[in-house]
Structures are given as C-alpha cells and as structure tokens.
Length: 353
Length: 280
Image (cartoon, rainbow over all chains, first blue to last red; front, top):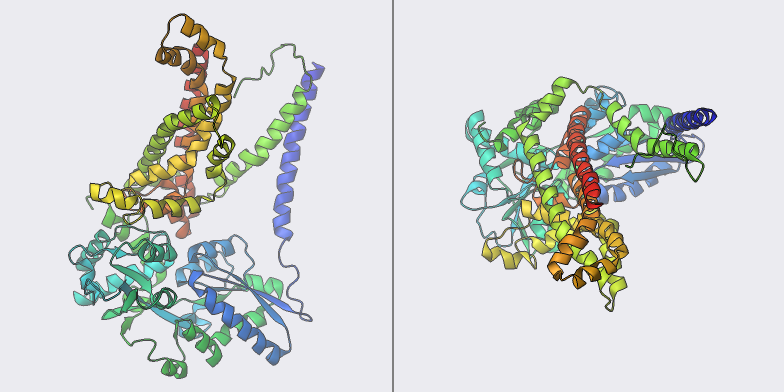
C-alpha cells in the first residue's frame, strides 16, 4: 500500500518536473534575444536575413555600409548575415530569429512576416521601386555553342529538349521561372489562359528533374550534366559562367521575360525592441545610393539607379520585361491561383484535370 | 515494450521500480511526448475539413504511396543484405574485420545530404554506375529505384546492428547437435538458426522502415521530385511550409505519423508473436 503511494508520488513528481522544465523552456525563449544590441552609445549590431544568391553581394555591401555609417553618424555598426532558401529564412524570422532587416527573393516571403505582425503594413511602399533596390530577370543557361539552338521560350518545348528548373512550390526562385514562362505564353496568345496553361504544362513535361532549390538545379545542370537548358536568375547565370568558365556555357536572353524584384524591408517589431530602427533604415536606404547600386551591379544584379544602370548597360542586355503586377496582380493572388493545393501547377501533374 | 507488471504483486529482486518508472516517464515526456504534443499545438487552424482535404489530395496520396513502397522495399532488401553482413561479421575471422564493422555505422554518422549527393553522382545517367546502366535502359537516379537505393543505404545499419548480437550469442552446440542428427546445412539454418533470428530481424526491419519513411535529405537529391511519380511525403511537408501553411504541413505530418504508427504497431505485434512461437 505504502509502496503504491510512493510510486504514484514519484510519477507525479516526475510529471511536475517535466511540466516545470517545459515552462522554463518557454520562459527562456521569451527572455532570450534583444541582448547586447541597440545601445545608442556603443556599437550597433544589425542582422540581415537574406536568401542564398546574395551572399557575395552583402559581404561586399556590409563593409561599404559600415564605413559610410561610421563616417556619417560616428557610430560603429557590425552586420551579421544569414543566408538560406528564401522561404525558410522567412519562417525563421516568423519563428523568432531576431532580424533587423530582411532581403528576400520575393514579396510573398516578406508579406508572410507582415501577416504575423512583425512588419508594419505598407512595407512595399517604404522604399523606392516597390522596395526592390536591385532587380534581376530569368534567362536561359545553355551548353557551350548552344547545340539545341535555343533562342526563345518556344524552343524549350521542341523535340526532346530537356529543361532544368526547380520546383516552384519549394523554391522562391523557381516561381519566377514559372511566371516568366506563363507571362510569355499569355503575351504570345493574346492573354489566352488556356493556351498559357498548355504551354507551361508542356514545359514541365520537358523537365526530367525538379530540384527543391535553385542551387540544386544548378548542380544538376552543371555537375551532373543533365538537361539542355537551365532556367536561372540572370545573376546566378552570370555567376555560373564566371565561376565555371566561359568555355562551358552560354547565356541566352529570351525575347521577353519577367522582372524579378527581390524586395527588402525593416522588421519593425525587432528594431523597436532593439532600438536599431535608424541604422536599419539607413542600411536599406544606402542600397539605393550610387555605391550600393554599384556593388549590386558588380554582383550581377540589375541596378535601379539610372546613372549606375548607364555605366553597366553592356553587362545587362535590354530585353522586354514585365513585372508581376503587370500580368498577375499581387503575390498572394498568384500564389493562390498557381501554387496552392489544386492550383494550376498541381493540375499540370495530376492526371484527369 | 515488455509489460513491467504494474499493479501485480510479483516480488522483485531489485528495488527501485518507482524511481525508475518516474525517470522513464520524465525522459519519455521530455524527449518524445512533448515534441509530439508541440506538433499538435502548432497546428493552429488545422480543422477536420482541412485534414480530410489533405488526406484525399491525389498528389499527397501518391507521395505516401511512393514513401511507403520505397521504404518497405528498402527495408525488405536490407533484411537479406543485413543478415548476410551480420553473418559474415560474426561467424568469420578475416583481416580488417574491425574496419568493416566500423564502416557499417557510417550511414548513421554521415549527413544525409552528403549521401544523397554522392549517390546521385554515382547513379545519374552520366555517373560512374549510372552510365553503365543507362544503355541497358535501367534508370536509377530520378526514379523510385534511386529512392529505394538511398533508403537502403540509410537503413542497413539498423538491421545489421540488431541481428549481430543475437547471432553472436547463439549456442553453436545446437547446430552441432543438428548436424549429428543428420540435418544438412540448409535445414539447420532454417530450423535452428532462423527461428532465433526472426525477432531481431523484424526489429531491424521496423527501424529501417520507420527511418526510411521520414528520410528527406538523402532522397530529395536522387529522386527528381516529380509530382505523382517520385515525390516523397516529407517533401510535401516542406512544400506546405514553403507556402507558410503550417496547418497543412501538420496535417501531412500527422497523417504520416498515423500510418507509420499503425504499421510499426503491426510489425511489433508480429515480432511478439514470433518470439512466442520460437520459444516452444
């Protein structure tokens, strides 16, 4: 009898201990963060949560900005970087990663943070050009000498041409590829949606592998030598050619493509908590300055400042570009229509729809 | 999962049931139950309607089929391969045996993404092995065969490590007795050795199978991720997260857990039953 009671007591003690430990855990996460930054007197620390292909760009830019800011405000600022897939990075911020600024691949990933109340509404109007300080577009990377003679979107669905692109449902970058193809087909067929869907469906029939991210697709195309053409961001394509040698690949510019606008935003909740708003806003504003724009252009992103664009006009061929709002409306609508359950992308793969 | 006789008045030799049970509950809660509960609580916005919508989505069902089939095949192949490896490691002496023994555990230690990239490089149409198979019309990378291979790689240590100790403990005098009574080698293996090995084999199978269902890193590189064909269930969880659809991700995860749990329960029951029958 006595034993029984002891047993019961031990178990309940254990459960209590468990519960209290769990509670501690919760407390800890709430009190963590916000330490060591935001003191106006000493150095400031900013965290820029970005996506994969901007690694080199921000390495350069952070040095330039720190120098400028110290000269301007007399305050030392160190910038920490975090890179990863755009969607994953966005989720980290939602889950409590203490970012002061986010610089991601598409507006949708920033809107998701806004929806959780971490970023104030109207973030897209806070900075110029829809808060996209630099832009890019979708181009074709082909094997040297372009053996398949690929010149435009139509050539992608001819014969046995194999197209490499990541899965638009798991990769932010791939959504631009998909939308670029869709926009081209609309243009060609007087905005006939059925025709556009047919074209995109055909395009994915020519896709033997769907990697989960843009870097994975680049590996498939470059290292595994699978496929005839890689749909890629212009900056990634230019970087690939530079890194892997001009003797292996050519870049083909289609007749028309999408203007990819990777946006930036201040994470209002976090900068208010840390008291870093001024520095965070300066950090993003300076991206639009001549120096910031040059760094972006050196890293193969298209500058938005006219004077810099003029200097780099040979690096970025002029082609007809449409924006997502021109053709599709908002990101939320686009996402819902194309990439949700039962959306158009899924219909393409589901038999009988 | 043996019943510990709570409430029975069996006299135990060693004291301390209360405290050990307390510890068990504590650790199980901390390490297993609380994270699983968090999964449930994290699914704010998950309604039954949404859950059933997910459970009836053809693409998700197709991915489940791919996941369970490939994990099942891989675990099944590992039964034979693992038994063979364990047999060689236990019954024979040869130079470098220790090294071989250590190599078995490597798939545990290797980051799965590394395994995935390496396997893809080998089996892709222009890889070392893939280029030999390609002319024969055998497509390994970017097919279900590739997924199965990746899962075999991940699962093999489970089978070897569960069978090995049991095999090492087997009393060889039984085999000698069988031989003196005129049983051939095959008969001896079937009637004397195999019955003892079935429980650990089943355990190994269950572990490899469970691991295979949840495996993500090594598979996404080699599978090609084609919807309805080579998409695995864990990838669809990632797809939901990419859309910031936590509820949808949880729905798929719960579905996966549910099916896995039922299957593992079945395997465990089978194992208990086989244990009973082998102790005649």
